[in-house]
Structure formats: structure tokens, C-alpha cells
Length: 116
Image (cartoon, rainbow, N blue to C red; front, top):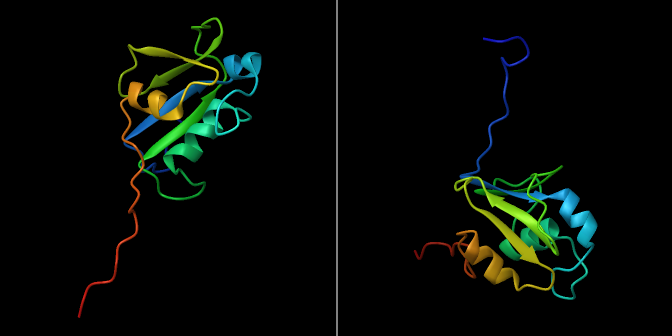
């Protein structure tokens, strides 16, 4: 084993969504309910991803994906790295999630106690 790679942190993710930070900075805020959030933040909020929780999905803002679409933010689903999407400002987050192949958030995530 290579030096420095003996330990690892276990991720509970089944996939990761990579959002280009460079594109987000150029575009500015343009997503969310009032078009005031960056794409990564708005996607986390839309999909119900909480910080420090065991989530099955991770939304990660990376330095640069090298695609640089004009007027949008480059987004890649790690399960399908051959497809790079361009998310335009003001686009509905449900449409972005659908294009990335993500399931909409469940409205009933809590389990009710079993009947006695």
C-alpha cells in the first residue's frame, strides 16, 4: 500500500454530484426559491441533504470541471461521467435533479412507530 493511503473515511454515498465552483462564481447566485443561492447549496436544500448526516447522495463543489459552458454551471453525476450538464440560472431544481437522474425527495421519510 502506498504511504499515506492506509486509512480512509467511509462515505455512505451511492453517487456524488459534482458542481463546478468556477462556473458558479462566474454566474453568481441564480438558483433556489428566490434565485439567491449557488447551485450546490440549492440542490442540497432541494434534495434534503443535511450536513454531517449519513446521506446516500453527496453534492460536492469542485474547483473546475474543464467544460466551461456559457451562461450556465457545469454539473456531472459521478455515475454517468460521460454526460456533462449545463444548468442555466433560474432553472427549476426539480428539472435539474431529473436530468441528473436523481429521485425527488420523499415527503414521508420518517417512519411511524409500529402499532402494538
